[in-house]
Image 1: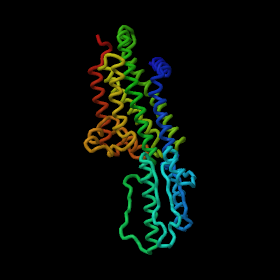
Image 2 (image 1 turned 135 degrees about the vertical axis):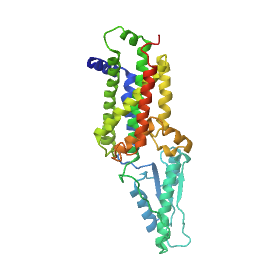
Image 3 (image 1 turned 90 degrees about the horizontal axis):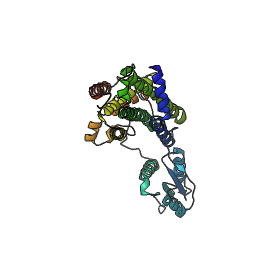
Length: 361
């Protein structure tokens, strides 16, 4: 079986499609999200600040915007040219502080202008909220008044701080395991059936279970490589905050790999051709990619949809992975997630054993 395992690994690494889904695809996602959100990067766009006032308030606001490091600041003293940069998508917004703003003169301007492109509404909202809060504080200070009502935030959970990139990185781990296992097994095993390779094995001394076990183990080896690449790139390349036990993360990854391989076997048991298997695998994998919480929390979905997708195989697996990797909790912190994953493993195993045949004849 060891020789079969090595042979399968060689075949997989020679298959460009297999390597793309297993390694290149998740690494590509990790790099893209890392460039936008990694390395503690909180920058949400580029802006230009045009400050025409020499008042203490205007200078303080200008400095506050720059010190906040929410935006990349591009210097452009001319308002019309700065607006032109918005039209060319080179900056997200322009903040214009008019001459005399913040001076005690009653006739001086009292409004800061924000110019933005509708496509950059998120950046505009962040700028508006920042300046509004800043000027509200300034108003209270000038009037020598204190706010009556305030807000206080309290974090529920482990209290650990983590970035959006850390959240997504755990999702990419699950995505890589799902794509590589479901698509790889479904297409690979169906091709073996279609080419009568599995049928021919019945006439050889090689036990069928050894052949299939070598296939499973070879993909689990690839799963380990996947997780190692993604974690190394995410943690050391883009500073993701993973504080959980690394051995436990790999163990969970193997459990996830097994889960999705079993789903791949179910597809291979049903599909008649390689093309059919590929289509069925994508129909299953693509909705989970976008609905199971890879890139955003499930509670951002409509309530009715969230109640459905939380029981998809990938959704509870990702909740377990994030609890362990980010929060440093036990895998059994929320037992229902573990129960759902185990239930999917059992159901997929039963269906695969019931339907899978070495030959369609």
